[in-house]
Image 1: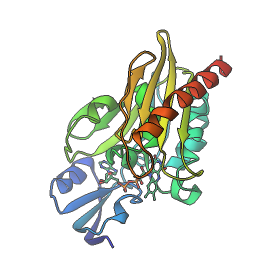
Image 2: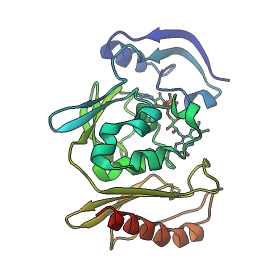
Image 3: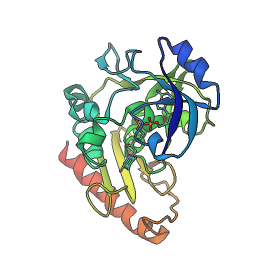
Length: 242
Ligand SMILES: Cc1cc2nc3c(=O)[nH]c(=O)nc-3n(C[C@H](O)[C@H](O)[C@H](O)COP(=O)(O)OP(=O)(O)OC[C@H]3O[C@@H](n4cnc5c(N)ncnc54)[C@H](O)[C@@H]3O)c2cc1C
């Protein structure tokens, strides 16, 4: 069971950042992933007082706070207006409603889980992530970085209507994905993010190859077999969305 000696509700990003520089301290989002560990920490840093729980429409971007939950993303009419139903298609498979009410966008990005459906969904849009110390970093760059112990504050999505589709293969409705794909229609054809390969998601164009591997959820050969099928489903969905 996870343990903390102290609980701090940070009153500024600087306070949260400074506390997070100590290796025995940890910052939490919804704690759904974190609480599975057996670690003992000195201080749990809660960001709930820092105004990170909203999805806001700005002039050119949509700003989403790091503490926004998966349920907020799934139910957002603003996100649906600009990106169609991809947030719902992606999030509805993640465990269940009570879980989605707790797990956060920030935790989902910072955990860099290779099977993450949300990272695969966001990658074709390559949103800007705003950190307290580093400032703005593109998601694609962040995925290549080592842990900076920074505090993620917001992500910014481009406020343009996009034609997108998300599909995944899982052994049952709420299992972890064996493979997930997101497609974004661009002037140069479809841009795909391919995740749960089982490595972290990568971006590819129609004619580019992707490498697959094995893990307990599926073999390399099974993923190679699934890939063109899921790609076809994305293409069908995007044609329907014309
Ligand atoms: C049983 C289970 C099944 C799951 N199934 C799926 C699935 O099918 N598909 C899928 O995509 N995902 C799945 N997930 C992952 C889930 O959707 C979340 O991505 C995950 O729980 C992390 O979100 P959280 O808010 O719980 O983060 P936490 O557990 O609170 O934190 C995760 C990490 O992020 C750090 N962190 C959190 N917020 C910040 C911040 N603002 N700044 C800096 N660091 C921060 C924490 O220190 C920690 O290292 C599953 C998780 C579990 C536990």
